[in-house]
Length: 263
Ligand SMILES: [Fe+2]
Ligand SMILES: [Fe+2]
Image (cartoon, rainbow, N blue to C red; front, side, top):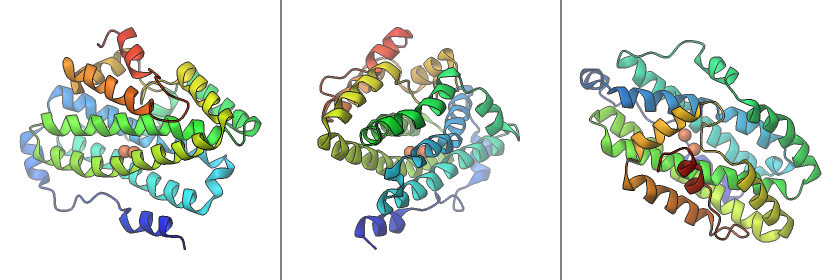
């Protein structure tokens, strides 16, 4: 088996939670803002499987190293959502039992369009489309990672802090995988570079925007990245994405959050 696969398997795990002091978590509780953020995060983590479904329709998913990553990645993401929901419940704010289905139903038109068009586009542009999808993955993983890092710094709840640290460690690996593989594929094809740029500029929305209202997306952003940290974040993410081949100078985060009035 190749060493890349061995590496994923060696590091992939469900985040550890048995050692956490849940009584202390309950005693400290959650603020209204934290409750909002955790519900949002739990909802989007639980929707990862939708993204996987699209990826699995691409030939690239059958490459053994990609298949190994996608399997371990989805396993890890599932437990992020699961453990955040668990923390909400411990602190007296359980999510509804049918939460995942309810959120699924809120998927907006663009999500349905994506579900319909992504397979079509991926057949028409079979060799270019994986680069596009992995570029989308890279920006979503990076913003998610920064979200957990900021939540970790501002929460007073020790269990939430530890959960954020453990989740962020995995998000860092996810981001690295998407980013590095997107770069590799973008380097190989001019068509992929053109398509990635066009589709990102035309179609990209922040994590969760497909199932959350614009007001919810804005609220999440301003809780996690108030004031100057918001400016810093959008600049950092856009700059990083701009280092990918074909995406030089791209601006995604900054115009979006300026438009919704969050900056
Ligand atoms: Fe996650
Ligand atoms: Fe992730």
